[in-house]
Amino acid sequence: MAIKHLVTHSGGFHADELLSSVILTRLFPDATIMRTRDKEWIKPSEEKIIYDVGGAFNVEEQIFDHHQRPGPLREDDQPYSSFGLIWAHFGRDYLAAMGVPAQAHDEIHSKFDTKFVLPIDLLDNGAMEPSVAGPLSIMTLPSLLGSLKPVFDDPSPTADDDAFMAALPIARSFVEAQIQNMAAKARAMGIVLEAITKAGSSPILELPMGMPYRSALDQMEADHMWFVITPRGDDWTLNGIKLSNDTFEQRADLPASWAGLTDEALELACGVKGATFCHNARFLAVANSRAAILEMANIAVEEAKEVKQPT
Image (cartoon, rainbow, N blue to C red; front, side, top):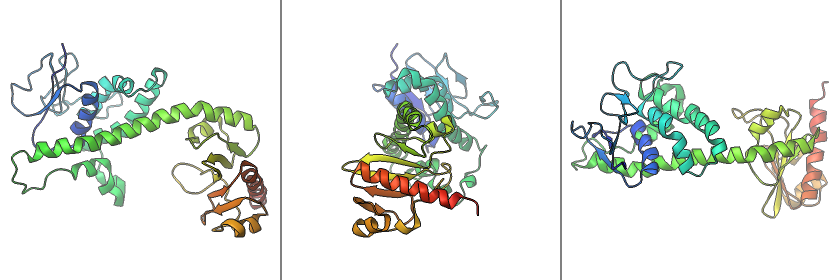
């Protein structure tokens, strides 16, 4: 029987049922969201999916709540919120609906669960303090989505429901962007692995376009690579490779003598015709041809070797 209603609780909303709604409305676009605590509505039936309300977790009855005691736990005993329960059961179907290739479903389902879903689960259950984000705690996704709630003295009787429906497309944009980026990384992996193999022992990685490459470097343990070159429109770029995603520090910097220079001044400093720009922080340079950017890359490599040599 077709799902006709997606039932969650009324009143103020949180990130978990809002993000659950993102998943479910993609899979059941003709279903109506019902925000209620009416006992008749939260009785399971074949036509309903009930989540974040109802006091039970039962896949067969299509009810996905986590507020009962004891609440549902992951294999590692970390608590689920309704979002985690919905993702665990419907996540792979959602990936298929998003057009993610089947061979990438398991990897992306697991990665999205770890990076995106689990933090929501932990925060919603009080198993993680918002303060772990430090000064950026107000910028976390649950905080940003929570800021879309109506103000306390909004007189409208539908204020909570109106705010929920207005927040839903915003929440959807974050989920879909994350999934699309993860799918893109999966597509890029094969391209980058081939480029790393082609480069051999060279410290310069050439890619056919800008794309995620960090995971492939880590998988291949290509620590010898210091710079990446790629075409960008009519230009070519030379980028440093960061030591990790958690720092701006690079494996090797572009030459200090290039920093902040453009056009003729940069050409004079590096001796390469066609050099057009070098960022003052020395992580990016631009040239107007592949030949020019390769020449700049080779110069950068030689200077980096001198810097890295022990004195």
